[in-house]
Amino acid sequence: MADAPPAIIVALSGRALAAAARRAGCRTLVLDLFGDRDTRRLAWRSLRVSGGLARGFDEASLLAGAARLRAEAAREGFEVAGLIYGAGFEDRPEVLARLGQRVRLLGNAPEVVAQVKDPKVFFPLLDRLGIPHPEIRLAPPARPRDWVVKRAAASGGGHIRPAVVAGALAEGAYFQRRAHGRAVSALFLAAGGEAHVLGFSAQWAAPAGPNRPFRFGGAVCPAELAPAMARRLSDVVARLAGQLRLVGINAADFLVREDGFDLLEVNPRPGATLDIFDRDPRAPLLALHLRACAGTLTRAWRPPATAAALALVYAPRRTPIPAGLRWPRWAADLPEGGAVIARGAPVCTVLGRGRTPTQARARALARVEAVLSMLARGGRPAARPPSRLELQSREI
Image (cartoon, rainbow, N blue to C red; front, side, top):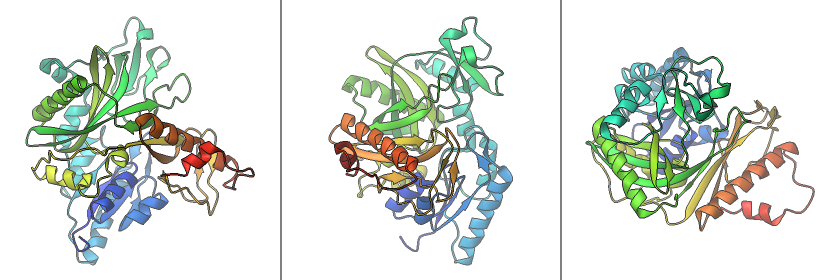
């Protein structure tokens, strides 16, 4: 596929999608906020867009970047095949629509994103379909101790606050009653009003203090679910895909208990768990995504037999990245030497595999500590012999 037209990837961080495209044999032009070392290595061309994780893309910078990449492709004799998007448009479907006027979108339409991410539309839809979800309110509840505040159309969990400490509400914020259960996400393909669940992952939080207890920490697949529960969640996914006319790769996030579940949200685009699910070279997931966007739903795909996990490394303090740092091969989303990571901001992603989900998660978490230790030493090798845990973390 070396001569196939390239696709533009746009996401807050484009590395995971660029890696999935490389596995699918697709050339890509990437627009994101970070311009990480491995993103640039994976992409045919890449540009950084102005903006930030909290405020999102600067629209003018984003549109100018897309125009520049299209022009560069044209100079090489290519018409861009389309645009694949990840996180970053949940609260700005109108910007996605303007991009779609310039480049064909290979994913859900902007109006679908708007419908899924508007709590005034999405949760009444769940009520009509009889799909359980935590109670929501748009006005402050009488007993805030039992509630959290969420920013509509946000991602990553860092925006969720206990209602008792929420303070002034951001535009589009809403209240959700606290619910209990294991955080489980269903990754699924959708096309033609139907869906096929690719697999389930279990997720965990990396709290950033008592006021940010739900910041995303990582995920492991497979999630250990009873077959009956897996069927119930798959049924919810199928009903939503039919009602919303979803296409391509999407994810649905649940809280699962022995006696039931609640649906929290649907993310109508590929996400971070591509890294842990996309391990079959015979059926790369981005190729299935593109086929689904064209109307063909692949049902034969099955998740790998072994477990895999990813975890985010957050800076515990203002952290400079040493020049010439040799990153481990199990690390991804790699900042350039000389960059300075703000306290609480993501440094990189680490990956781990194992025979069981417990082993894979433990390996990923050990690698978080290994990266933090390496950065605390200024990137210098450890002065002592590596421990057994560190030796294990060198394995793939």
